[in-house]
Length: 414
Image (tube, helix red, strand yellow):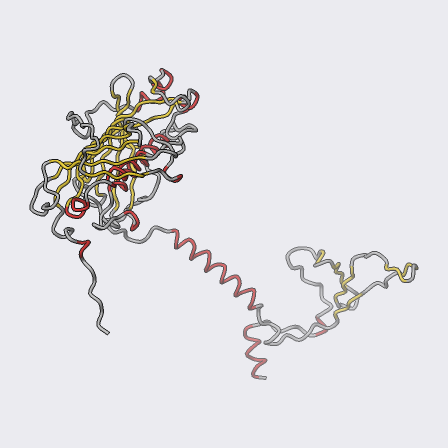
């Protein structure tokens, strides 16, 4: 009785059987096809369900008509607390769906407060700024891009320069099928090759730093193009590196230099900036070295991974080869801060090279007390043909970097 009283307060109590013959109430409109069954009201007040017509079954080849199935629901089952409970599984599924949708929308909201050193898109392909003339891209210094000094290597910075140059052409819509070539250049089998590169490093970024690289292009003489770069610290805006280069066109089939066709000039001319080089031009002649050089490294040969899509050695690889012959004491006590490279010719996958270095005005055996050191470099083939001439300048490392190679963790006592 108590249970009946409680349930009656939450659920309507069914009327007596005498009321069951009353006119049925329509739910959701007229009574229709319910799950494959046709419903009709019988004279006795019960609900009759008639199955849809089905194909006659066969037994031993003879057709047997299935009897019409009538299901009669007599007097309605009395309603109790148990059979009036809602379908909790359906309710739980609905609640779960609502919570998942709300959580997804919540996670998509940019409600978190950003730190000042966080960037909107630090690892994107970059964007064109300053009236469409400058391309800008950010890079994070990875753990595998730093060296023994715990700073980014010169090769890392040079790769960033090359990457922004290609992405500049791509973002401007000028990238054809070649490696940095425009559509008109591809039609004429022309590619860009670098002839001169100057780099000045004020400070090397460290692991975890995010750097911002800006690059733009200008005319260089009648048949050349100059590309400049400026690398800044994204957090402080400090200038880290400046670089300037000169590029000319070469026919990739004949491997000979070419003038800039008018069709190509029309493609790229609107992107030229009328500005001076970001690095003051080094007019000092880079001398040629011979077998009298102080240090010589032989037997250098490119690997397959050193080739680019134009089937010649990537120009960044030359820098690593040049430093192969640099004396170890200089690498340990000094850091490279200025570099001038003159590219003379390309080398292919079957080339064997020699790296020569000559140190000017410094005692390699006593470098700790010295100032800057200048080195001259030559990368050549075994037959003497020049690949790259170079000049590098080195400054004494800061005290917190000096001697890092000699730091060995003490062994723990047993």
